[in-house]
Image 1 (tube, one colour):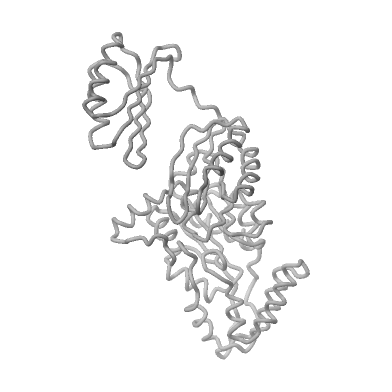
Image 2 (cartoon, one colour; image 1 turned 180 degrees about the vertical axis):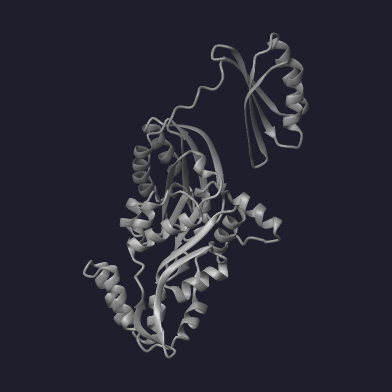
Length: 403
């Protein structure tokens, strides 16, 4: 096949029903074999590429194809050559670019860096047009670790998000997605909301600042902050839950992945009294968090059981994977803080969502737009797929969804 004569037939013009069928009906009369097909439509303009084996009478096929193109009022180009498409080299990857506004300069820079690494772009697909623009490049011949490093640097320079993932069967089928809660699935931090109600917001913030400067580890900081809540009415937890706001796109993420048969988990360094209720309301499969001790209707200032810290979050992910009968390479973790680092490293795909720089540096990929549903594009799920599924269930998705 490598030395066999072939024809590349390219048809361009206004899209309409029946164009593809008409051209293949013409080709069917020449006894050719179809080797490859590619078709795209942009703003109603169609580009159809067909690679076929060359017939004995090429001139007759050219005339027949030209007549069909003329009847369709479309442009035609036929190029002779030899062989099928070259076998794509090893190192296949999906490079996803996310940006609120995607400039030509950014696209030029990203595609230039892909070429610099010796990789080739085989295909380009738009995954979403709102609330962000998401474009996916199918790349072959990639040294994936090097490609990821080079594109991370360029992405920061261009102020866009770029995710690099190996291509394989793992992207298809059922997976487990585990998300952090505070500042990821939910906006804000539960401990801060409780502290405000308790009138100790300043004191709690001071302990948090010490922890961020490395003077306290997570467990010590958590216990000190919870101690400041001693005496707070337990009913305040209901008030805080009612005040919680989901991240924009959170409901879209949950309902879309549930429809696709994914398993979902949430894990939090916050509190089970809030996290477990959230899991039940959103119909999330698994949840893990710290438990506040309550006695006589008030918080005691203590935590019951082991603290869910950085290591605890990773352990929870492994537990959820075991219970859902999935290997770790089929897991996805999403988080924003240092407490999520072990979980992101343990998962098959770790996504830093609006995360601190230290977290973005070690995660597989980073998303820096406020819409949680953008993680769906990294899983190969397009905005059109989301809308089609919503329409089947009678749901109209806001543009963009903010709740």
